[in-house]
Amino acid sequence: MTTAVIGATGRVGSEIVGGVLARGGAVTALVRDPGKARLAFGEPGGLHIRPTRLDDPRDLTEAFDGIRTVFIAMGSTGIEGVLQRIAINAAARIPSIEQVTRLSVLNTSADSLGINQRAHYSIDQFASSTAVPYSTIRPAIFSASLLAAAPEVRASRTWTGLAGSGRMALIDHRDVAEAGLRVLTDPALWGAHHDLTGPAPMSWPEALELLSAELSEPVSFRVAAERQFLERLTGAGVPAGTAELLITREWAILAGENDYTTGTFQQITGRPPRPVAEFLHDYRAEFV
Ligand SMILES: NC(=O)c1ccc[n+]([C@@H]2O[C@H](COP(=O)([O-])OP(=O)(O)OC[C@H]3O[C@@H](n4cnc5c(N)ncnc54)[C@H](OP(=O)(O)O)[C@@H]3O)[C@@H](O)[C@H]2O)c1
Image (cartoon, rainbow, N blue to C red; front, top):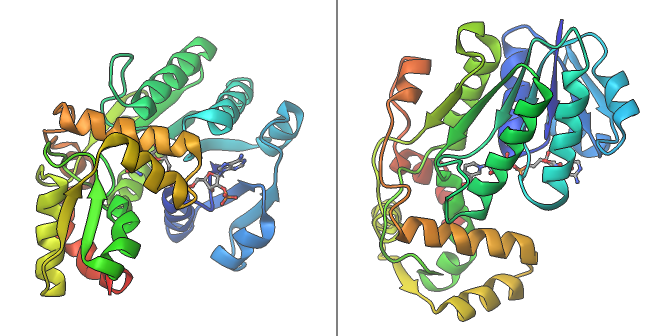
């Protein structure tokens, strides 16, 4: 039987598609833009790219016909949060579906300062109400979040943000996908939430010290006033909802919500998570 992937063209979803195919599994990628998906994946055996209206329960029900497992990797707020709920509700009614595994976030709770954390909590509550067979991975902030700094780093060897202090154990999105694939494919890991972190907590300024070492040039963090930070984000074309999410992410970092590690990645995969320095080395070209 087949795995359906929602958010298949995204950073984590695309790695899940590749991972299932590499294991010899079959994937149906439910996408809104089949051309983008074909560009990303080509036409490998085992992959069915299916244009799907995530806001149409009937279309979803047809798409889920014969599906055994589902992976969902998309945003938690706004329309994406609504579409996740519609997909979960449809999946709950398909007898062949044995597990829905969803990409969530560390510190998922009703009380987090982070909007993303609260939104993922409410999606979990919804999933629970449908009784869908369900698991999540809850990763820390991705190392790939540092790519948002790339244009400013290229221009001025600085990165402007709010959280000049407060640590988080940044995790490589490739590790997130690897752990997600294990959860998706190992029934022993089903029915639980898996809190994933990178190897060591660090602040944004400390992450930039690693980038400085990679580039052999100093890169420094500049703390902005909140209003100024908002204007920088929206001025760069970041949608208002995403800017709000990023600002509250900084609040949560400053409050120390993310200052810990878990051993879950190692337990699930049998190896330690990649260091942030490895991510920065692999993505060095983005910063020069
Ligand atoms: N960034 C972090 O630091 C971090 C940390 C922990 C957890 N997370 C979680 O990771 C999730 C994001 O994962 P990601 O980085 O893999 O996402 P991403 O790269 O932004 O991919 C999002 C996917 O969702 C699809 N999508 C978005 N809006 C859609 C719509 N209206 N209709 C249909 N499809 C839509 C996109 O399709 P298109 O390709 O067609 O746009 C894409 O396939 C979030 O829930 C976040 O909470 C992120």
